[in-house]
Amino acid sequence: MQSQTSVITTDLLTHMFQFPLISLYTSLQAIVMANIIQWNGVSYNKQPYPGWAELLGWMMALASILLIPGFAIHQMWKTPGTLSERFYTLLKPDQKMMDQILRDNGIQDKRAPEVVLL
Image (cartoon, rainbow, N blue to C red; front, side, top):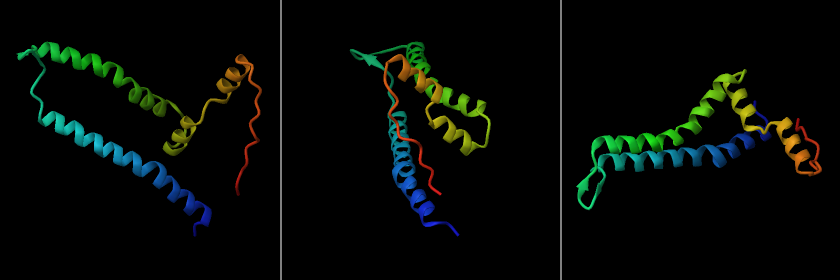
């Protein structure tokens, strides 16, 4: 039997993160598919660009776009633990790096101690 807190937490996470992300993903898929279906090629003054120029443009655009999910997949693959442990580990900021940033900028750490709910 689940506790009341875990049910609320699960429902809250679903409504705050999962549903909006799924909705955004579905909307983006629909937009991309509509653009692919209606694709006529690139033209300027009614002169179509050659195919190699369009391909070069797409490759240049995707070179920067695909780095972000590629790096995320690489980090998920490299981090030890189960899939959910890796996900939660990678969502947390690196404590050593945060301490260094605070120290370098002369900011005093006034964070409250972590509270563990049982």
